Image (cartoon, rainbow, N blue to C red; front, top):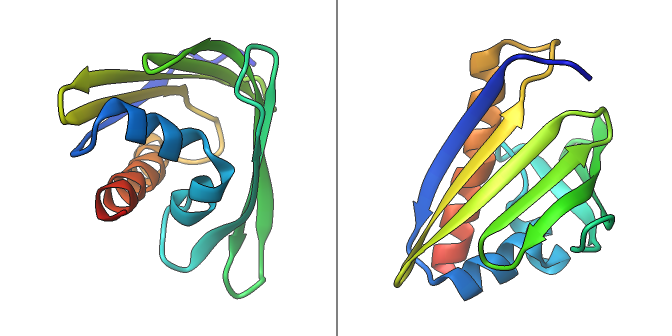
Length: 139
């Protein structure tokens, strides 16, 4: 899919890189943070974290009115540093993990889709990243 617009979201998690990496990639943790608003959840997640490996998370409205699978294939996996993947629709995502001692900066850049406004997409991905930060710091 050709798209000239990339969106970047970022946060700093008050946790060391080893914990951040584990919580980001372990399906048992993914189901606890991977949603953009309190009325959604991720009841299922699988993750084969290796180049060529696939991931899939089911994101669903808690009231049962809607759900979809967010899935893709890994193209780069550099432990504790970088993950890149292609979403099933062909868009690219890059996540950089910067170890800062007892904290970790996460910078996520993704190709925008053509359906929703850029700010809505940025807001949704940032909300998921903020949920990750809150969950990881509280656990």
